[in-house]
Amino acid sequence: MKELSKITETFTESVIREMTRICDAAGGYNLSQGFPDFESPQEIKNAAIAAINDGWNQYPVTYGESELRKAISKKAARYNGITCNPETDITVTCGATESMIATLKAIINPGDEIIVFEPYYENYGPDGILSGATPRYVTLYTPDWSYSSEELAQAFNEKTKAIIINTPNNPTGKVFTRKELEEIAALCIQWDTYAITDEIYEHILYDDMQHTSLATIPGMGNRTITINSVSKTYSVTGWRVGWAIAEKAITQRIRKVHDFLTVGAPTPFQHAAAIALSFPDEYYIGLQAHYRDARKFLFDVLQKVGFQCSLPKGAYYIIADTKSLIHTLDARDDFSFSHKLIELTGVATVPGSSFYSKSNKGKTQVRFCFCKKWETLYAVEKALDKLV
Ligand SMILES: Cc1ncc(COP(=O)(O)O)c(C=O)c1O
Image (cartoon, rainbow, N blue to C red; front, side, top):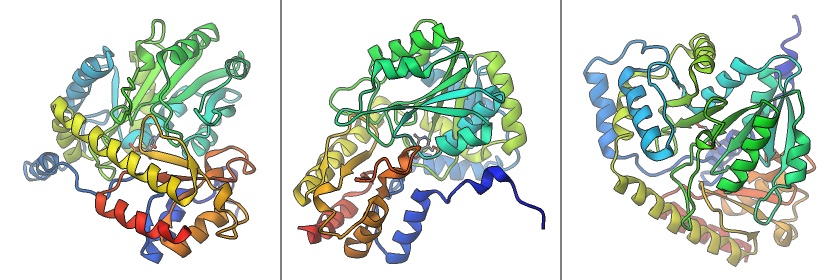
């Protein structure tokens, strides 16, 4: 048989999905994969069922149902301060995941470089490889996940095509400040670089943090691709509805890639997503309140049993340092720590090195997520007591 693709040969199974599989087999508590185990809002579940019954079951407009694009445009203006034309500046995709790869495919040429902050969301690694871009990594340093301005400036050069920013950030919980985004914007303008911002945790913020969309920083409107989705904000990760907002010429390219990749995101869920996007402010306040309490609860539990960690400013993950527990579990590294933790307690985490470009980094870190119902979080507390 002829050799299969060289590119895919280098991919490993997603570590998060692998941990989920092991966790399911052990009947454990899945704090590895970032999906809620509580119910999605009843109103949008009803809207999805109604959309199916109303006959929205065939291919959608490839770049998104008009009703949803209008709802995205309204919400982007209201919450993000982004002005966009629903006819020309929005592409609805199968989740933020497809928006990211479609955007990279739309803008990257061989030899182009992209800048990625690390630790980073696992998919950005394969996304870079699939699009043919060469990644340059800029470190986010503990304890507050700040970066060095000097290292950031050094990462830019004439080959830099784009920088990827994820704020609020997975896995660190960092929320990029306006000052940091202004610094990034100045570099993008200096080097004529695009910015791709993944803002899917934009509503999950703590301690009075404010979400700033890079596209609203002067000079960035026509060079930023703003990616979002309903997955996290409305607790519907299985619906696969996301979008990319970008000026017309970029959008035209993204739409072409999207059309050939997937044709369209599921039609009935697009109609239900339009309802979700018009939820009143109270919905977002309630979502934040749950996550604020869950964050504090898990943080306290982790500290009590001996992990070192800091409170995230946004999103729903905590990176914990395992140093003081490595001997308790007789673990060699982050992978064996995660496996042994499931064996002993049933609690699944993600090994820290899977968020770094080099496997020697993140060796004493694991990531927990807390987008879970109280019942699960209380059970996790009890299970982790076995470490004390
Ligand atoms: C930063 C980030 N971007 C994108 C995704 C996936 O988003 P979607 O479900 O919309 O494809 C995730 C999921 O965990 C994520 O953490």
